[in-house]
Length: 477
Image (cartoon, rainbow, N blue to C red):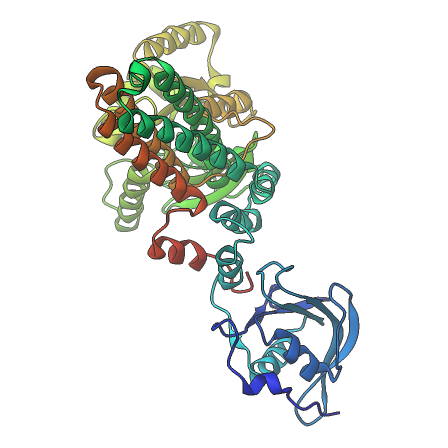
């Protein structure tokens, strides 16, 4: 069966944008594979592809998909969403055929033959953003939901996609706009009814309320960033301290080779785990020591590189060896890393604590108190028995400040940056108001704060930022 191409193919795109198409499901063997189209020609392409003259919006139709010579490429369902009531705001068609790679590629090639163009990464979502179907936070949440590494992260991303995070930002924007109106009125009518609007306390109170709200949203966003990105944790220490054993304990499986031979680990080993809702990107490293072994020396160099890039450094040491050598953990850390890492980046892990006698345990308690007095923390564990592992995870969460509420929202580094800049501009405005009574400078700081905050949802965004964000999406989105 052959279907002639409708007249619409002889006309330019009404919107000026080409109709785009891409495979929207993972390529591979599967029951169903979906190809998505969006644009003014999507409907006509569906008609030409199937030989049908019409489709009812939002109703599935079983069809065969034909080549130009009338042979059948595949068969499946066609779903038509008439714009603007679609994901992108344009006419959208979804072709649900079988999930084989060859079939999907043949069907996509036929769609291209009928006039569609290959969609770029994130182009469907970009068109939805451009057509005001979703804002920038919601668009990012699509990718975050797809890439989520834990149930909590997925749930948070869906809440952001539904608009909860955007609502918080928009409420803040409304407060800022209202505040700017008060300040502008005070500047334009300084002598109105003999009232000094800048010093009557009303603007200051509203500004401080907005500052407090920004800090609340910033705290929530920091939790959301940890949910989304997790933290990079590097296990470091001398050979045979128990680093690989600790990695295996945290991963819940034997990922690293463990032997009594010093220098068994020759290279870095990565593993991602989710513990207490926090995603940990773990890196096991070669034992740090002087060596003439060429291969081991390369591994140690890579270990030092990983250490410099870590969000959190777990220094694992053999507590029995430490007692014998009478070296304090902080002295050992300084020897291993060249300088003592800051307390917020270093967590000391005393391994093999199950081998300590009662007297040794008392000595370690004193040592632990001395470590704490200097702002550091130590956790006693046994990788052999599992003792102390739960405490280690809880301490790690405390150190990075990970305690997300049940209604947490996913967030990205750029959101944190924009909120911090907004808070800084509001602090400037507060100083200009309370110290200098400089209305024009207050107004300018509030304007900058509004611009920074608007970057989050896309109200104020540079094209290169949008390109970077949507370019990280998968092709079918």
